[in-house]
Image (tube, rainbow over all chains, first blue to last red; front, side, top):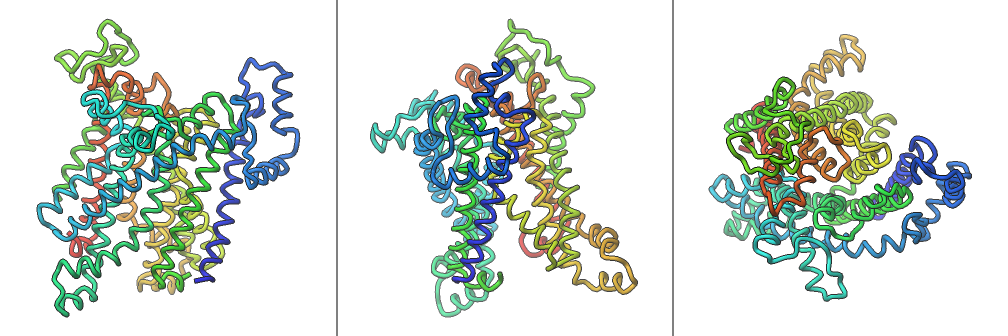
Length: 315
Length: 270
């Protein structure tokens, strides 16, 4: 296990290095001078020169890359020139919207998908299975931002159960904060739940065909007992990987959903930075998102290996 | 089989609408008629009009063209680059080049695709072409991995051994024997990536990073509809419905094709 963990650690570090290089390079190949790009067409030459100095653009590319990375390692993402504030502060303010939203959506997605997938697998071929599989087909075809608009139309505009957008802030109390994230979380969660339910069902069906289920049945367990005691637990292993992938979808997908609900999260920050051409902010937030996705995938790999010893030997 | 037919009909409708839009649309979407704005579906405008008085049916037809073009080219990029990489990796199994290609794939998979697509379009400018590139890049590892996996099992087969004995090079075997046997697999995956591409294009143009006006795009229509959803719900429901039906059709078609083309699954799962 230690060996496996070490080898995964090495590839984690390589992934992070390559990822940071790619992001740096994309910003680097902005046509023309980044400072001129950021200030727009009508900028004064002195202003461009001042921004160049502030961004450290007069240093060579490798030097700037190293400064950027070593800064980030110390929690310093640089300074936004539109907000005139450290980017780490901007991120810190907004992560308390984006992260809870992703976690909330992940919880909802799991709560919907697990029972649905298990139910469908246990009634394979029956009416319940067909209905759930039909629903998931539609679920994977629905763009989450459109679903979000429908939710707003029904629950905010017509029924007035929720507000149509905005975030009250956690200082107004946990439940009120959670309430203002509820519609966005449902919008994010349902399409993902459809995928998860399908994976859960097919993984469970694979398990139900295994010999150990027949053995469990032969020793006198009922179908239901065999399903819950043996099949579900084993079926969870592949589902775990998908769950890790889903978290990254939810974090990234949140960017779009935040737009629908006018939530002051990382997505809003990215878009405001894009329209203000504040590339350092874009660069920093993208790196943070990529970083969290890579870390989550790494943790999932480790958990996977801890649960399933076969995987450790393979690599 | 039923799913395949329903899927083919659904996606066929939108392909026909897209092709037809080159020749004819009910109205010209570049002419604004503000006096006639936000009309609900009626005899003159079958799907109603938007906030500029443009005919929504015509916009849906033009939008189908954008969606299909973007997704199709993105799948093309993935196949043209991914399939040869997969074949190459399989032919050099276990060698350095195989390792390099597969680790490169893992790396691209580790990126949240939407975030990188946003980065690319933000830096290089919002346009349909940049959206295609951003979506296409993430199709490469999908096809490379699939091709390698399929090719590896084919390399073990006797007919490949026969081809090797007859003196064919690995490259020739890959092209002449491996690739044709992977066609089914690639068609099925292509259909699925096509539907994912349509969803990705819609998301990118919804946030303003895809096709730019006056090019019609379903995602763009939804962005315009967002502030109008309470007074004119049809402006949001119709483009969204178009996306759902197209993607659903492609997914059903993909599943149906898989069952049809892969006899093992037909026996095992359905």
